[in-house]
Every structure is written in structure tokens, then in C-alpha cells.
Image (cartoon, rainbow, N blue to C red; front, side):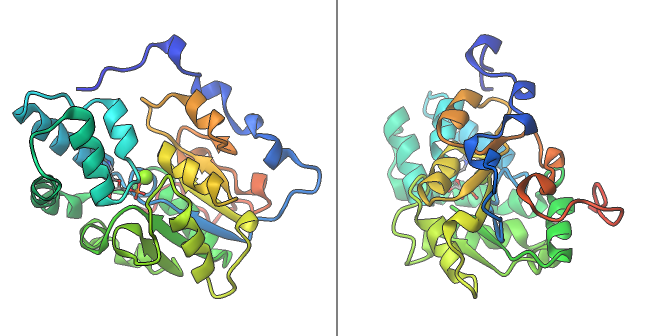
Length: 264
Ligand SMILES: O=c1[nH]cc([C@@H]2O[C@H](COP(=O)(O)O)[C@@H](O)[C@H]2O)c(=O)[nH]1
Ligand SMILES: [Mg+2]
């Protein structure tokens, strides 16, 4: 299992809340958010637990520990880029193809059972009801995206499109490069300016990608994350859970009596 960080080495979640918006979100005449882009794994769907378990077991076979530091460097990346991170950092005696074959085999069985993370359904349904254009930008490819979403088809219908970085020819480099978010913004029918897009991300690589794309980003990191790294990377807001998000703080329509806490 991962070693948790000591409390001194990280900021307290409670110290980085709605009141801790960076300058970008505190401007006098804030730039309106017209489009919202969601990450998938670890943000909308609780899939990171499966990657952790499978990769811990895989690394143990070779006498290596799949640490939080390695996982954090993989999160959000394209499949091959993520595989290289683990193989090179941990000096795993396997090829990228062998690694991918194993991980695919294992993930195939468990991903269809994945559940929504708290607040995901409430937020997406709310924005959909208010006709805010939304898309998904993920490091996944078609194969994994299909497994993760096969039991959440109605949920997917609320998004205008999704960009699957791992096999989209326009996404040359995965997160932390900005490509996936820029391609995603361009594909909305009205191709918004990145400054009008708000991104939701759980991974440091994803926050860096969104910031590099010129977008504002709400981070909802894993509890093991070093929040200072997220702050230093330019996250506009850092939350413990999507349930804490107040749409009106980004000039989006406020929650109302129709917004259920969890429909799923
Ligand atoms: O422990 C891990 N988590 C996540 C990834 C990578 O991150 C992607 C998920 O990215 P996102 O959060 O952008 O959906 C996965 O498809 C995978 O490529 C990984 O390799 N290892
Ligand atoms: Mg993610």
C-alpha cells in the first residue's frame, strides 16, 4: 500500500477552499465560463482504484513498489506514455507491449463495474439542464473508454463530445501537454476561446495541461496528493470533492431544488 504523506508536507484541504481562489477567479469582471471540460478517471468515475490495485500487484511480481509518486506521474497520460513512466522509473524488466497487454487484460474485467465519484452526477446533470456545453478530455483510448462507460450510457449523452487522447490523431502528446484540452475546445461547434473553458481535473498532469491550454481548472486531487504542487501548478480552485463545487462561484447557474445530491 502507499505511504501517506506526513501532515507537514502537504497543505490542509480545509485551508484551500472556495475562499482560496487564485487571482484568476477573483478578478473584478471575471471572464465568463461558457464551456466545461471534464477529466474522466478519478474525477467523474472511480477507476483509479483499479489501476492502483492492478499495478501494485504487477510491480510486486518484479520486486518493485508502485508508489504514489510513480502513480501520480502516470495519471492522465496516454497509455504508452504512462507505461514508459512505470517501466523506466521502477526499472521493470518488461517491454511497453508486455506491460500494456497485462494491464489491459486485468482492467478489462473490472472497469465495467466502476461507479461515479461523489458529486459527478449532480454537477453534470445540473450543467446539462442549464444547457452548458460539456465534453470529456481523457488520457484513455477507445478500448478503455468503452469499458469504463459501458454501464453509464445515459450519462455520456449529456456531453457534446469526448476526446480520447490515447488514440486521437490530433492529440500528439498526452497530459501534461495542453493538446487534449485544446483539441477538445476546438471541437465544440462554436469552438470557444480557451479562457472561457473551465476544466475539472484530479491529476497534477491534467492541471498542468489545462493551465498550459490557457484554461481555468478546478482540481479535485487524491487525498495522497501534495496540495502545494497543485497550487503551484496554477489550479484555480482545489476541492476535496465535486460535492463542494459551487457553480455560481464561476458565474455558472447556481444549484437549485432540482439538483439532487446523488441520483446514482
Ligand atoms: O495508475 C494509473 N492511473 C492512470 C493512468 C493513465 O491515466 C489515464 C486516465 O487519464 P484521465 O484521468 O485523463 O482520464 C489512463 O487511461 C492511463 O493511461 C495510469 O497509467 N496509471
Ligand atoms: Mg484523471
